[in-house]
Length: 504
Image (cartoon, rainbow, N blue to C red; front, side):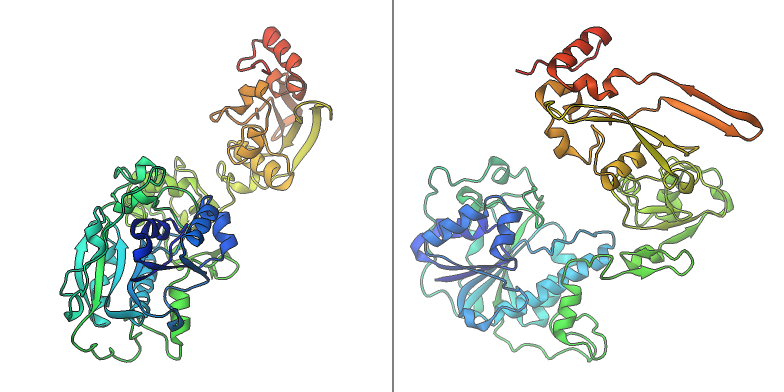
């Protein structure tokens, strides 16, 4: 029995199938990325590839699930488990569903051409995907019958009923072997804590996200089995629509271009952008350009968070969690600058939804021009010697910002432009992890950025000269405090510094 798997991210599904049925199946596993890209994305792919080769399975890379080559031969089963394009931009849910709907339709059409008599196509989806991705409509258009819908909890979900394709199974399906010790995936993949149980979890299958080893929740998973219908395939739809997926195709657009444009990851801003003539800004999605609201008179004094949720973006921000995430990721602009959720609005403010902002950089106060874009003067106060166990430098930053908290912007400036991240910056975790053990006060995951305001200067505006108020630099901010374990222990005794540990 020949089985073809497509789009198997880390190939753990293919390996689990090979383990479960052993010599009773001839497995061909395919992936779209190359082998080196898979190994860089998933930590266990190297071992999986080696075991698949040892068990006699064939692994092919660079295979597009929407254009399966006929040279692969005929198969009794073609399997696509949890298809996903790896899209990072999920703001426009309709466009996201459309792209995956096109992917599923063209996969079904391509897989049907490789089926043996009474062969079966397997498609595992979760949640509302069968409905939002229009699976039933695609099956009817392509002349396929959905012969079974079952949760993937038992091996019976893999085998179609005897009436599949109008001719029944001539031989009973093989029986799954007993899993050997050490094969089972971690408990969370077998217990249902990630949304659903899969019977191949006992053989090592782990459902992972497209972008790496992060866990993927697959609530209410269902495995759909398709067989070629006995009746002829219905005639193609009206002109101007793709005969495979049914979506509108622009005049003169080739089918390959149509699939490539819709069933592909979101393009980068440099590759595709929408421009706003009024502000001169470019956006990653058309949704961002169209979502523009001007604050009316009744919005005077309202908080940006409440007004965006209830009045402006009630559809785009359906919950408090989504709204907070949008604010923290800088996907909301106020008068051309990223806005904080506590900002009070004024009549006439124009608010735009956007999707890109440098990590760690916030808009501050009433105007980003006087905070984030003001000059910063840098002076070295203290630095550790080259022979010190840790390389730290204390910098004195003088900025002309008049309003707002400057911590986020200064951390971004030092990390992205100066190449010396602030200790405690959450976007510089690798550098923080390299600190020695005696610097535990700086290594803590919840440690605040080691940056403080120690002085304020006021000048102009009717004040003669300049008035300055300045404090002493706290010992925890001096590089000399952490130069050696002895110096750190001495600071702990003299200044009451907490979190200083012995080096061993």
